[in-house]
Image 1 (cartoon, rainbow, N blue to C red):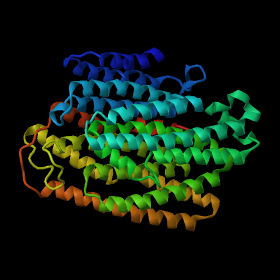
Image 2 (image 1 turned 180 degrees about the vertical axis):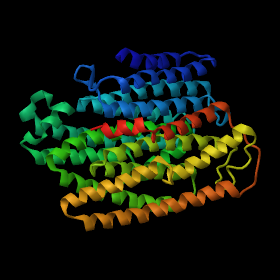
Image 3 (image 1 turned 135 degrees about the horizontal axis):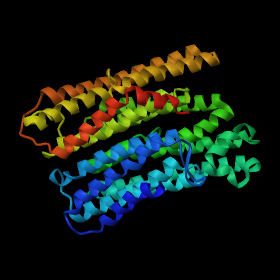
Image 4 (image 1 turned 60 degrees about the vertical axis):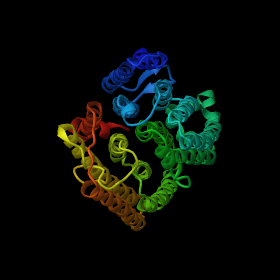
Length: 470
């Protein structure tokens, strides 16, 4: 099974060294092959030991890896027409795929790892490879933001490593060298003799992960990078890279729930609400597609973490899936929308002719409305269930009034974001000069795949699968 998972990645890496334009379609096809093992992971009995006790496939990892592989397919399809929208050399194009392959190795290690050390190595691989993918765009801004990402990523990954060391030290007296394993930490969490040391380690790890997702106090670095990069890189950041980060938070927080649930919840609640408070006003002031989508992605990741620690596993994972499909779709759409040169919001959806143009217009419109949680978007249902989980959690701890106040504040902040998206949507749809624009079949296919995936999230088999996780 492990050979089936890594063979397409090795093929992608090898093909990226071939100096022939005909290899472009072969690289895209290899990206499709990654779907095969991820689909099989959904069906096999779990937990499944992929590589001893180091890589284990469980329901959570199988779901997140499958979602990431679908996003990878969409990105590969958009790469087929990248040269028709931006100026990129064949050498830079091949180099993108070379580091895309390395990125996949890091992603798989992070998602399927049962070892904190291997998780960290995977996250570091994914981080370093994306630095080079940012630099695929040979502009001063992209090079500057690549260095900024290297600095921010180093800070975040260092915090995570230091936190892992403290967590390991807290559990070593009872587990010995096996204190690095997530499953054993979870099973023996209540036996840890230094819970305070674990809590400090968890807080440091979590802050490192939150920094990598653009949370407070570093809210703008992610938006700056996604603005400077080519749009497939932005799609990778929003739809795949954050998967490697969020699954780490899921695994560490499950252990923390066994040690001190109240401390976990209060810490995450304050941090996420503060993040959404700042992000909502940054979104209100933005006039840029990429920054708008990037900042709203930070808001959605904050909601996912909040729903998760409230005991709402189903709404958190449903929201995660919806975000993982919607944000890359919007970033890839932005690459098409900006193909005529200087960025403009007004009238960007006008001028698309023919069946492909109309289908593109419809899909982008629906994605924009779905990302602000209008029904029947999966995000609408995930937020209903998520806020419900927060209320149920508060009722158990006798602080229902405080929780209702926090939810009311969140709804006010979300309404600010809602207003901004509606304003952008109206200006895109109705105003501005119309000029002839073109959308290509592979781009329509990528958006259509994302649309199908969003619909699939609300089907009974997927809902049952998500409800049975954890």
